[in-house]
Length: 86
Image (cartoon, rainbow, N blue to C red; front, side):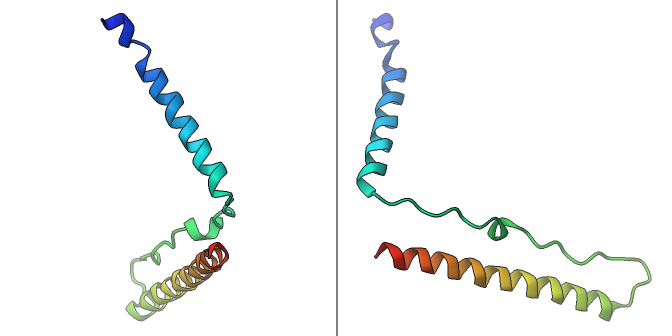
């Protein structure tokens, strides 16, 4: 019995691959690449000993502004893609 079931995992893999290929072909949609910038993470401002708190806060806010701008760009990209699919 074990010998006859030995090929099942391979068959399952083949069926899943075929189903994925069929679904992709039927969808007829090729999504554009997601911008690399959208995957970037903004690091925190570097903390240096003796630095004035206000300067650290300003650098941290600048980093937050950069991340918020990136989020807006990526949301715009996604919205444009979604609009094109409707």
